[in-house]
Amino acid sequence: MKKYNTLLYYCYSPIVNAEEFAADHLKFCKSLNLVGRIIVADEGLNGTISGTKEACEAYMKAVHADERFAKTEFKIDEVDEPSFIKMHCRYKTEIVHSGLRDSSIIDPNKQTGKHLEPTDFLSMKDDEDVVILDVRSNYEHKLGRFKNAITFDIDNFREFPNQIDALAQYKDKKILTYCTGGIKCEKASALLLHHGFENVYQLHGGIIKYGKEAGGKDFEGQCYVFDNRIAVDVNSVNPTVVSTCYNCGTKTQKMINCANPECNEHITQCDECGDALQGCCSEACTTHPRKRPYDGTGYYVKVPQQVLSH
Ligand SMILES: [Zn+2]
Ligand SMILES: [Zn+2]
Image 1 (cartoon, rainbow, N blue to C red):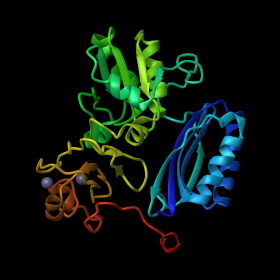
Image 2: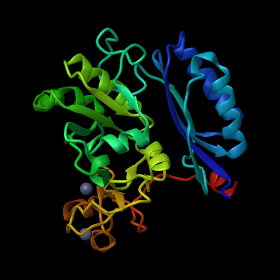
Image 3: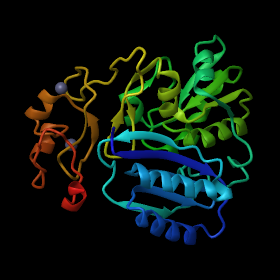
Image 4: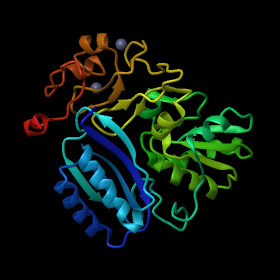
């Protein structure tokens, strides 16, 4: 039995005085010794947090007890150690940054694509009239994606709205969107509806819930996550590796940051190239004066001792 849980969740629900709420919520999380990252905006909550099972249970109970967040669904993973080092809870203008702050254009609290449960997504996804659309960024879908999914070469979800014109040829199809945990799809699907797409569906709970409830079938590679785990397995039915080493092209799922702190490029790199380039993305980066020592992980977050010892 693993001692810790990591919770992934979001809730689109209007929050009055969201900045004040964020400050109070941070205190509450710290009182439970939780670690993680929560974004609070006027439109809702978005978080990944980690802590003991008991602390996570107390947190979920408290969130559900608040009627604004009663409908929040938590994706719960068991982990050997907390997935973060510190606790952050910050106010931002959006819980997922789309650059579309005008809620008269898209407002997931009002209109969004139809939610598909994982098993429904599984049974629909291969139909003739269906297009599967990955709304995540390039470094995420390079590591793993649904078979036959359309992907965009974008660095950030902010760039998604500019990609919609490229989908015009699919206007008469059913569009099935997916992302990590479902939060981006609420906005992406709303935006597609706004642009005149009529049959827009979204994978409820994202890849993470699909892995738990539909075995992750036909998800190729691993799912990128925004915590210290970097990636998780989701497919227990027909798993494959799709990502390749940035340097030599062999298949690998190992993600690193370039050891040159000014480059810090987030890439997949095999162990052999990692050794040869000392964790750098290129020969040029190996000569940077502040190049960080490579320990084989390609991971450079500082871990305070007190966190490791509990
Ligand atoms: Zn390589
Ligand atoms: Zn580099």
